[in-house]
Length: 192
Image 1 (tube, rainbow, N blue to C red):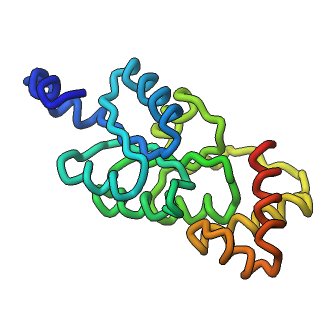
Image 2: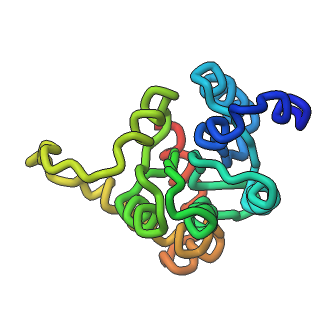
């Protein structure tokens, strides 16, 4: 949306700021598709491929909503972006999306200010519902399913990756495994 279009809304500027959504996602095609879907629902959408671009957008805009990918290009962490957005506006509704879901990063994302954490693939309905679901849910069903060793291993790997800002070499060193072994595990996990 151009600056001229923003100015042409006149009396609706306050409303638009309430429905202003920032998408921080380095997958350009996914960001565009998600953005168009939210625009059809009445949101004004800003897009940033990473933390630096999000900082620039925040100089001129105050979005009420944000969707942040956990893993951004250039070893940039979505968790740092969540922290930045929350510091900019503690009332902003921030949803974290990730293809690398783990309990550790979910907990950190919520601690840093996200209102929800969703595993990919998530659609616009899921994300919009997450914006409205800020309070905790005591009716959430608890399962008796035990966690598999593979799941525990993956969560540990992901926690170490998050600690190292997704630096694969450093994460492999901390995990005591060869870098290629870790890269293979990450590729297998991504395919699932």
